[in-house]
Amino acid sequence: MNFDFSEKEKTFLAQVSNTMATFSKAQDLESGDLSMIRNHLTDSLAVLAPLDYLKIGLLKEGAPLSGTLALMAAMEQLSGIAPSIFLSVEMSTRLFGRILRLQEPTDDRLKIVEKLASGEVIGAVALSESAMNVENDPLATVGIREGGRIAVSGAKSYVVNGPIADWFAVVGRLDDQTAVYLIEKEAPGLTLTERIETMGYDGLAICGLGLDSVMVPENHIIGPIETSRCLDLLKLWENQILIAAALGMMKSSFEAARDYAKTHRSGGKPVIAYQEVGFKLSEMLTLYQTSQLYAYRAAWMADEDPKEAGVLTLCAKVFCTEAAESVAGKALQILSGEGYRSGGAAERAYRCAKFGQIAGISTEIARVRIGDAALGRR
Image (cartoon, rainbow, N blue to C red; front, side, top):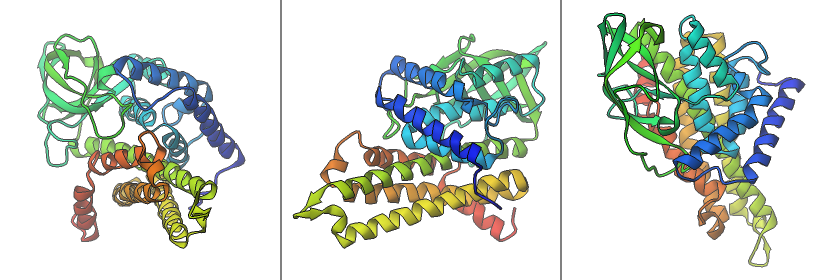
């Protein structure tokens, strides 16, 4: 288990960080109406595509990194700079894109994968229904065979990229198993709800979907797949993204607080000179680096021993997402009034952190699953 990166990998990670940091300074990527959010995302994809960042995990040829561990490190770099763009990019490229490869892709699906990797299309995954996860909310979206096509009906909620997506991967039932229906945005019978306003991730577009007998051709169906296998994979990939989001929040919060403490004065001396500030910084750094090790180990395990990766990823998700809120909160205390102003890295992280705890598999349900595994029940 070696978490050291090669010089080539370090160079690539720095390139992603520097390129996106420069790009993000020119515009506010964390706010805007739907038109602006789509423009921000397409512009970001255009910046990331020449770096081959979008190929990681999708295409072997031309990808600068390989393996989930290196992917986790790359995602961490992006999430620390632009949280909303990060979630939009990853839910489109990594989650939607990986779903396209759940089975041997058809020529049509392979073309979509190639367009994702070049930043030409935006994907969205419609998984959850009435809640933000499917752990205790079984799939009610269903497809019925009609000739050579499938009529899909149901409803989905909290679809990241929903209002701006070109393609949707809608997860539902078919023949008493799970299937994924690939649906274009203009498909008859597909309707979108209004954009959902959220506490954090102001630059993210989220909505619900309604499906009323949307006709899907057979070559746009992935599956049927055994339900537990399919959902376990989707939840694993989603949780990996949310873990990386938490790492990025901690990185940006810690750096903002550290830099402020070194450059500002209070009571006639530098803020860093106060012992309690040093204590907070040490706690923040400990939580961040421990989270990083946890996340990297879970990512490494995803390739080395997939059977064990599920529970370890849940452990990492619980620790990292809850640590992100704690680190952001401590950063706000150090930043004082400066941190309370809207638009700072720590303020933004504090509002975004809760999403990671309730999306994917919530930390409460994750604890139950971890306990079941510890007792040999799973």
